[in-house]
Image (cartoon, rainbow, N blue to C red; front, side):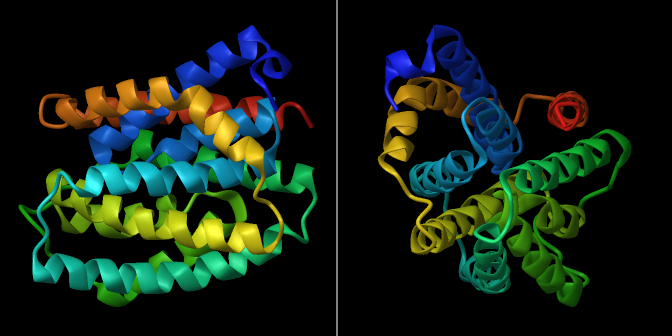
Length: 250
């Protein structure tokens, strides 16, 4: 895959997609896959979308990780979530090799639709700091989220729904950045073992690197100033539009 092969219009759409997707990552610690994967899957192909998302999750996660300070209890929580998520990712990742392209696209679209709807409709009160009241549900959500991550590159929905009520947005972002860094690395290993890695992952990453850097920077510094409720609703509407666009092509 080269710049001319993609075409100018496709490159512009990819840049805008990554700008929005990684603004969301910088702002909340999660979310780029929810926008990045559906668009790239539709424009280029689902397998490249999944593998590129995993690679970028890992690289961006390393960069963001260096900007936060973590306590011992943070790392203990991150380790437990990551352990259950990894088990799910391994199962989901191997299922990908057994599924058709169209089926993968449908799974992605349905997951994105559900998350978008939840962002629009659900409103929850969160504590200051971290207060995990139902750890078993969190471990279950992490495992199910991992299956979604391995299968469709979207591990966040179940994990986010489980942890969001139990921590404020700064703790939420800090924990998720570390968790999804681990998730990105595990997905890369799994996808590579089923021959999904290609040189096109690096090409796509280089093409979109400027938009990723700009979006990530703006999102990171907007974290404390943007109204999170309205931001979630806008992103939710965008996700619904993307998922419906994919589904209407079948």
